[in-house]
Length: 113
Length: 109
Image 1 (tube, rainbow over the protein chains, first blue to last red):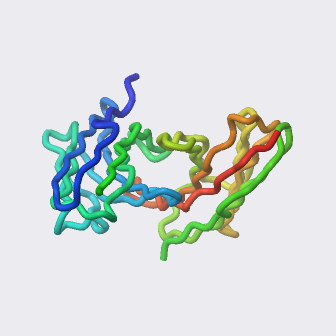
Image 2 (image 1 turned 90 degrees about the vertical axis):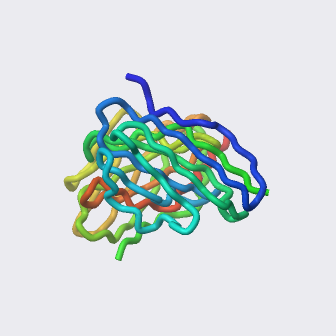
């Protein structure tokens, strides 16, 4: 089966600019997650979708971050405006059920300068 | 509260055995995951324990004690390619994982 697809792989932007990331989960996986991983730390959940509904976005900085999953398949995560501390890897993951764990995409490495 | 603790870094020798410990406190506990993450890559699934005891998969084994809030990942016959970070994550309801910061494992020849 195809894995979780993410793009772009790398992105460098200046602070106060905006950026968008795209994710296409494994076919049939209803649950989709966006994580932020800062170097040397574990992944931090930003938002979790179940189909096209939001299950948890309690740690999403909603003043600058937004995410959507229209039609319950692929998803986009946007940052507007970006700050230096947003420099991180943004990981998308999907899951079918809890026993199989998550399958992660290759991530987008964002550098804000 | 939710908390996952694991050592920051460990060093081991090629061919040896290493045990990476993880302690957790998560409400609504629904199992414990281990993931491997090579530098610059995404985490990949290693194991999932929901019942107490040892699960073995080739050179890797994972153990869980729910009463103690404790798990470990055991790696045998270490190879240089096992140099990576190992992430412990506790599962709770709604298919959510609470992640530790990861243990960086350095393998020396």
